[in-house]
Amino acid sequence: MSQVHALSDDQVAGELKKMTAFIRQEAMEKAHEIRIKADEEFAIEKSKLVRQETAAIDSSYEKKFKQASMSQQITRSTVANKSRLRILSARQELLDRLFEDAQKKLATVSKDKGKYQGVLKNLILEGAYALNEDKIQVKARKADYDVVKKAIEGAQSEYKSKVNKEVSITIDEKDPLPEGSAGGVSIVGTGGRIDINNSFEERLRLLETDALPSIRVTLFGENKNRRFTD
Image 1 (cartoon, rainbow, N blue to C red):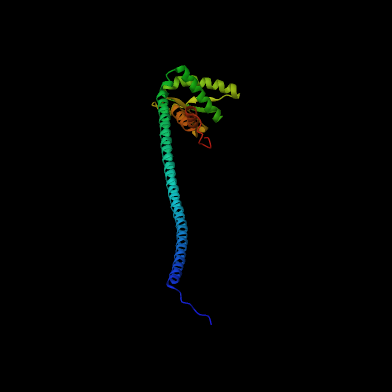
Image 2 (cartoon, one colour; image 1 turned 90 degrees about the vertical axis):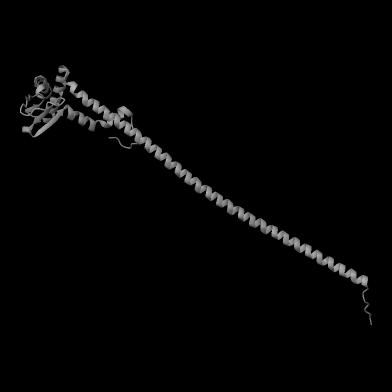
């Protein structure tokens, strides 16, 4: 039979030392593994937080940029509209002043009898061509009767040469134009049922209404923002 020999104190101490060293080594390795894993988890969490914060900053910046851009567009549009309204207002004031000046100058046209007679002749002819009747009447200011009679003679002569027929034109002395009128004539046909108003005031009013678009173009040029012209 084999005999079991008891370990000496030195041998026991040596074994304990080995076991202690082994346990310490395992503990150090385990601690190292835990530290590495903790570092990895920290890095992952840190990266996640950085991405979240970056996304939040980007979103906030984009929102603020859009708000600033929208505010800038609104401001630019407001300024442009105000400028456009000021320009339109200034243009309208200029046009109003233009027609006011023309209104004031209407009364001076009749002072030059020679030119005035020619103007009256053309106004009478315009009405005669439009009516195309054998007999027509002309309304005028009483103060203009003499020059109107001469204008009628010229109109009748030219009408005959152009249309190859005569027209009887007389002054309607029962219903003259108001003395406060700037001048011109009104041509009446079809027994008084048709009245072509060629007084200076009416011609200026028609000019203001019908010729205003072309006057705008002459004064200010074409409006590039308009798709259609008048």
